Picture 1 (cartoon, one colour):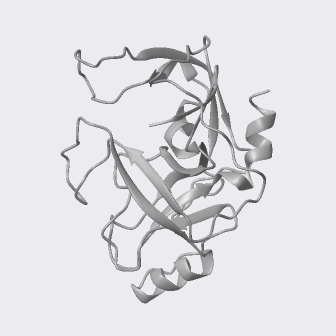
Picture 2 (picture 1 turned 30 degrees about the vertical axis):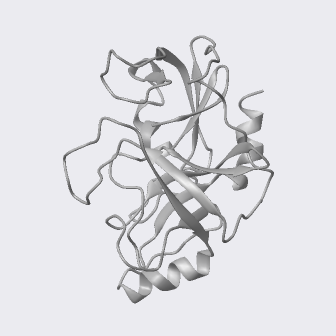
Picture 3 (picture 1 turned 120 degrees about the vertical axis):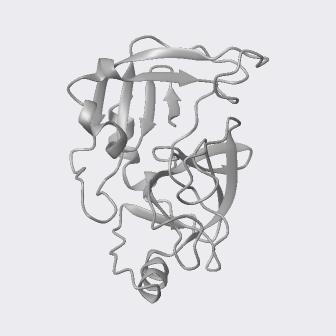
Length: 216
């Protein structure tokens, strides 16, 4: 899943598209979908090819959460805006949003390890937590992970709500004064919705300058 940030620009996780960086024609973007593979939706979807993949210059795969896990896709043509296709705003540089509830969305698994995927777009509300707290919780579960500055964690200490397999690259969104902001990009996680194992996201406010420079 991806997020439209302009008429010809989409933001997603770097790890989703890194291997297609030199073959962008392998990627097709479908906008405005709600029920997958359905012909009965009230508004049509839009499928557009990709002309260029711009990976964050500091992106790299790691055994833990990937570093600077963000990419901008340039579409082959402009996307039409309508009720089911709208852009999302980028947050101001280095905005934190600590303690706020944000919403992850996607068609990923609804049970950890399940190969079943929902057809209808799912969403879940999760609180944004401090990076140090996130590290401490993981360590209590025997997971020694470093949450870097360009990462963001969201979830409950008790678990129960989370993004999951198949949600990668999707949005973590927050509404402020009636405007939706893209605050995170689904990046990594140790299982799904487990106690003291919140989801790990790319922190969009850490790279909003880079994203803006690649969409203007």
